[in-house]
Image (cartoon, rainbow, N blue to C red):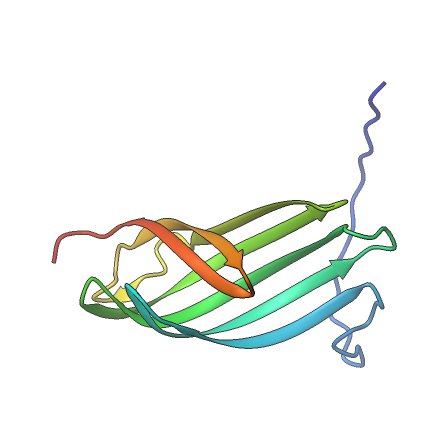
Length: 131
């Protein structure tokens, strides 16, 4: 049996709200250094939500990247969202559409991530217009 809920809500900024207003929601800023075929640095702004069930949590993030790819310099953004549901994990890690600038204008693609012995290994499947 499925149920449907409908309604509305409004949003109003809270001037006095601390960064972590709800204990389950966390906020992080991260610096990253990229090496390999994508070489450069990035800044990640991430929100997390932990649950009382072990192995279940989510995160969403926007990442601003300044890098060289295929010998071309520029900047772009990644969007990522990770879900862990009782230990089963999924990850979306994509180039934000039309975020490329400089010599990386027009970049699109999706990144896959493998963590092996604590090392983050990436594969970026991408397209880049001809120079």
